[in-house]
Length: 162
Image (cartoon, rainbow, N blue to C red):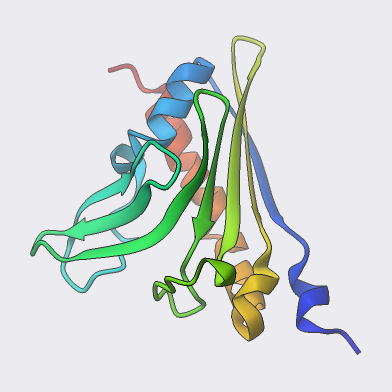
């Protein structure tokens, strides 16, 4: 018999190459998060106005809607510019915010120089912390509309000249 922990201990891992410096890639991914995050991926009922990752340990990851309402989705747990960021993913399988950090999975993104660009590795792990819904969270972020397509949007923005 397979337990929830057995099926949710495999991370979702995505790797892309970006034709941009490590510094630019990190900046676009973090402080420039709103410049590439799709408006369709919103947590509020009203249209998305801005998506924010606060650049510091303990910083909020949240969305603000055009009506002023806000919805948190995570918290920065490691901030090491321009090489690494780790975020506690505080959304459950219904895309609802759970303030209990012990229920949060974890997203680590690293930025490494390679051949005139940057290798970006995103690993979303610890789905077992979501309890019974961990496999649904894992399936959602690993799906076609999950981290893979989001990283392609990020790459397009990071490679775009200002």
